[in-house]
Image (cartoon, rainbow, N blue to C red; front, side, top):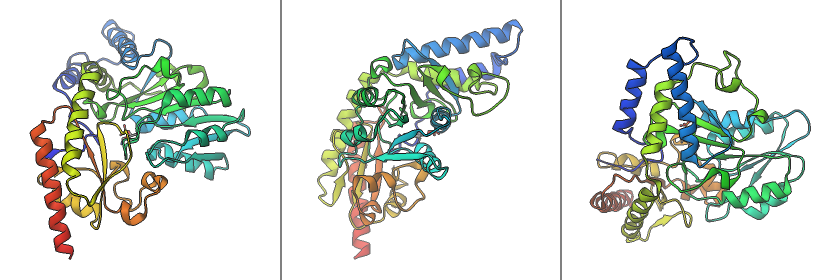
Length: 372
Ligand code: PMP
């Protein structure tokens, strides 16, 4: 079985698992306790913040550990809301944890605008500029789209936002970019940045929110005052330490080059079948979104699953018929029905890539024959 759904989740690394075990069974103390072994855990946790900032390329700012990117995104946005007549701007391609929240804010009576997407899957930068004003409070745009792999130009976005919306907080969902693309948070000049450990060989249920200026962020839950009072609750120390270990073990540039070649090879094979469309342009090497004419993506996924595991676009919304991201790009519902997301990992071999593309084409043709 060849696993090609790495954008949904990745396998945890051995080293991360060892770290998890060490901080669960040996060094298991509560970092908020006041005796020496616990103080040492608190120190390890603070070092972990500095280590993660280094991986993110951030000299300024702070790290708030969370239960994953869904929480980081909700905290970033709800925590930045303010009283008064403010405006909120979101891209139309956001993950459900931002997109559904944006729609909830709209229902609550807030002024919410959605930035349209280009056919490439990127946001329309001119449309963003037109939506901004001194009344804009939050702009939230993801780095790499989890459905299409489209890469938004975050530096360009931050420049547009700083110029046109001086009071705005810029939040970036960096889940599919961190440990996959080379970037430096200080250079990108964003205010808030969400990450999730299970996308880069760390454990599930843990993530972080980078905060440039924590004075601008309000807490959503009340409790013991952990994480600068912004996210109370005993920290999930084993998972946090494993996450940071996992991020340090990744050689982003080396993996990028390897995965870029693998994706190129995969697409060369897939394009031998002219009924399969590839969505987007200049997308992340880790993600390929394919549209299969005349079959249901769900049926194809199930027909493949004993040999090749692929995804439907977003694991979180896989059960929904439509897909707001592909719709925002302009695809019709019957095209979206045949959508399959293939997502790669540096551990794959060229042989596995060739084999999986051949199996996908063969299974697709068999389904088409059956449907005749
Ligand atoms: N944002 C993006 C872009 C994602 O791909 C995901 C995971 N599907 C999330 C947010 C949510 O992350 P988590 O699973 O950690 O809640």
